Length: 112
Length: 114
Image 1 (cartoon, rainbow over the protein chains, first blue to last red):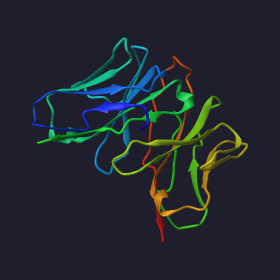
Image 2 (image 1 turned 30 degrees about the horizontal axis):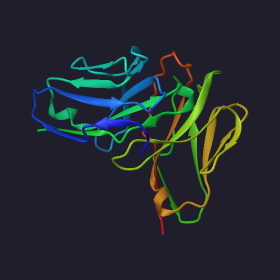
Image 3 (image 1 turned 90 degrees about the vertical axis):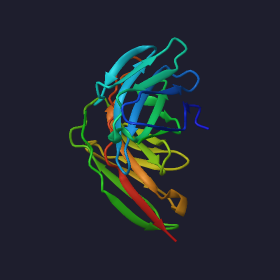
Image 4 (image 1 turned 60 degrees about the horizontal axis):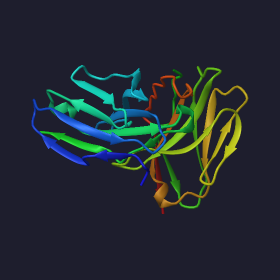
């Protein structure tokens, strides 16, 4: 157990639908990062939050949004889902970027 | 953000030492070098991080030459369970507040054979 909790582990939904992925960072970590990994692809950075504020943004689609709440958990919202959104979505947390990231076990999203 | 270049794949045998080199010619003064390991369908796991010279922990060593334009992850006496993808990342720590766009490249797929 890495200390980063992601729910749900698996999610199957239809095209056009909206889903919410949840991440609880490791205790004491203020930064949360979201990544997307499609089949046999590298990890694509989506977005970073630090203590509730957005700090860095990657190639995140406009259909996707995220937020970090006062209790530091984060949610990634994916809307108008397309088949190509099927992927593993990872959340990571860190105290500082330099201390290394701790990743959760991911949410596998399948869009049918 | 410094771009990194790694071999796409490497093969090794159990018990051998494996060295994976990462090139980062545009590394900036404040950049650190970090390596992660990823097994299929799992999140990456932090292996080691360094700024210069040599860093060693219980699982690996990281060698960084003086010009810092490359780095080498050394895995001593690999086993079958070391078969994974290894990512080299280079970037500014950014402190607690600074944004840090962590970019993972394609990584190096290491295959360890019996």
